Image 1 (tube, rainbow, N blue to C red):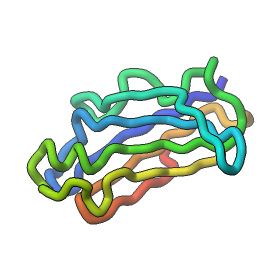
Image 2: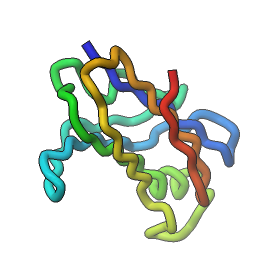
Image 3: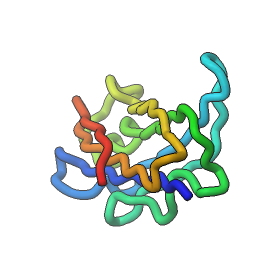
Length: 118
């Protein structure tokens, strides 16, 4: 059973990114993707459930979309609409031989870092 989680930290404000909208897509081909789940980050910048449940998970390519523009406008850190970094899209290949994937995102209005955590 493979689980996939995320954690979003707001580097500008120095705190978890509360209330950020997150979408997960599975890539069905090189040009077609399908939305499989939507989430909002909680008070800890995490999700109350995994990005993908074990029932949703199959080995393959996925995209995780983070709605950073809306988040930073909500916290009055930017005014532009759309913003330079309106969405952060992280495309990953997830294999069935892994028990867990944790994908943290460190974000500011002008840059980000995403990595495979533990």
